[in-house]
Amino acid sequence: MAHALRRAYTLVRQTGCVIDLHPTAEPARVFVGEIAAGMVDAGDAPERHQAAGHAIDAAVAEGLFVVERAFEFDFSVWADTLDELQEHILEDWRDARIGDETMKRARMLRQAAPGDRPRVRERIRITRLQSSTEVR
Image (tube, helix red, strand yellow):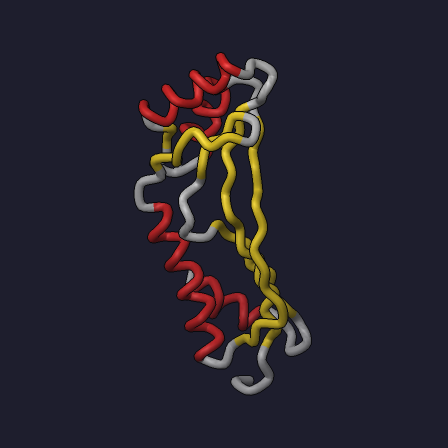
């Protein structure tokens, strides 16, 4: 990520910006309706996501960019079934899966409220980095 930001700095005009969008280190959670069933077993994802934030901090400290604006929001991926949600995570997330205990709780929640759809919710950080004129 640090290399990518340095490269982006060389490509962005003095008046340009970079938009960074990545999950925070907060673990993703599985919900059925509005009830949390547990966390996604995400391997080293929290560490990688935290490292992305540190890379942004380092690029700002180097004077490559200034943070024009940043905020966090929740992002959910909904599925029709728990198996479909698990399949999505296995195929599209690196080294992640819904663990057995979380899946068991989610299945119980689904039985209690069959109309409630399962989803996985992540906390996302978006940052607009303005190219710094100090370094150029």
